[in-house]
Length: 315
Image (cartoon, rainbow, N blue to C red):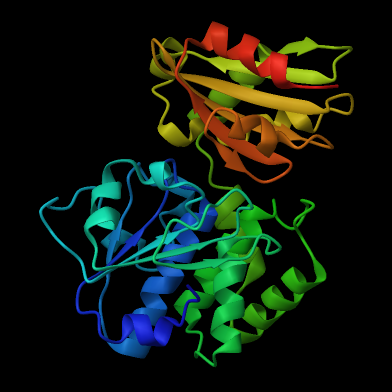
């Protein structure tokens, strides 16, 4: 069903906003923007739930300090909104709130999203969930607050790789230009997102890149992150973010992926490419995402997961 947020939000007294596991700037920025807009327009303070730790470089986002990892699972919300959640299983433990809610809204931009909400606002042509929200707010004459503007800018900036990725369009630039008109300071937000990495995170990522494997005349690049590696560096869930992009940046690389050992037979995969549709590859393992940036979880060891992925990559 089409999404008229005014009609959906106005009667709701208890609202919950959800992000996906291992949250990035888009899901967190979209959540904070929606929180600000709901509070400003409807005078309602929504709850915000994150199912993984918030990366340090996003802890500056407006109202992010109000987000919680755990809520009483017996709670039933009038309205639950999932933001940038490509597949419902990416809600993990918070899925129970989505399932029990009286009204469920799914706002996203991934082409693999199967419209799992009662109401769905999905635009695969948008750069980010943040851009989907911005377009809706402008089209429906919602007054974008300064806090929401900062949050939307972060969502758009990070999901476009600071406006470097192929999902960056003229519409994207028009959107962020209007956000700057509202008062966003691009240089300040850039520094918060990209220049606040800890020494430990940088050393960990360098370690992972240095042990990368290269196949097919260096057209395939991948690295494996074992639990012992994470323990050695006392690494958080977010430490592997960006490694696949680094491997993809090598001039000979066409496909890059990172495998993270979650358990003995559970492997998290992040894939990036320059020309190949990696979303189709990840869909075969119940994952998904964008054409050149996707992910999945394989219920097997990292060694077997590597073999399965290599079998699917057609170069």
